[in-house]
Length: 244
Length: 244
Image (cartoon, rainbow over all chains, first blue to last red; front, side, top):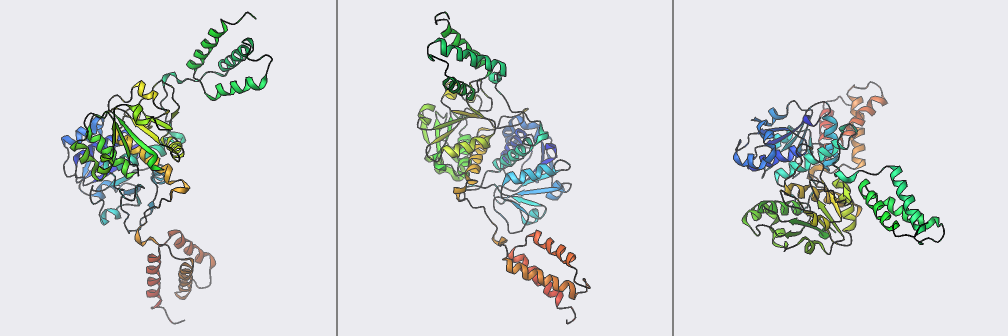
């Protein structure tokens, strides 16, 4: 589905922006790049800033009109810093745009179109679009660098995709973060409860105090490893307690 | 409240990344930049890439340790491409992080900390943090450029802020997009209904057909200007109809 999403850059002036945009795309799982009349491409600066996304640059399609770039798309979203008065349906929020794009991209290509660094898209190019989107920003200084705008919209598309049920996206987990089993946790709690009494902290079974401390440890959500460290600490204390 | 949010860059290697980060911050309404031992700063490259955010660079604080940069903060979020096994509370999703940060930033400074381009943050620096966040990305290529990571997290913070009731954030609207009043819209609908009959399209009042076409125009949400154009068109047709 992400392969149905096409990033189209129209007449980009700085090759570095093309490279940075390619990198931005790839980090968000997008690979389809189309360049409409780029001023300079291929270029060393593009390759340098693409970093590990040189493959995206290599497979980029270069065309001479926006029409050619998007004519097979079912949805064409023009990204624009300044809203035009041409009344295309407009997304105020990139997240709403992304949800719509992901929906359409299930079955057919969808394009996100970015204009020139200084002047954006022409009115004719806006007419090739079905929707407009702006990135809400500081009213005093709201013009993002082109590759930053690509990064944000690609990020929102990835976000809409990964939050969908079918995406199968898995968050990174640190190696040590496996939670303990319920049984392991219960063993810890009863070990703790036993030592609360053996140590003289609780002179008689006091359910509320036991519960409060047990709730604290539950809330801390110790990993399996941490629980093991705690058990070790309790055992170290235990070894100094008088025989029961 | 956004002024309570501090962006901290630790030992940035490329001055261009500092400049691009400053621009990214400013587009999202953030102004507080702190640099911990930047390799080269100030620098022409930083100034060039900052574009209209030179003021953010000028007011940036330069310090020699992360401690100094964040010791007055109530929350310190370390942004990390690779999760460490140091078990800081971790946000899987930048939007959850941003909601929390905006909450805390109501009353006190909060820092977002970004590490070195190649090696991120050291374990000692992670210990200065209260939370970690990662930007979910392509598992095959998930390392964003530093200034892109700043842009995304700044964007999420701005998003959490603007969606809050108190923000007063106003979306850009194109000049011609004022909606018509209910009265103006009703005038149009009755004009349309009248001409459906006068033209012979409806030989007798046919409520369903009238409603269907009226619903279409309602759904189109014409602006005041567009409605005026439609009225003009209807009047042009009307002028050719036989007298009633």
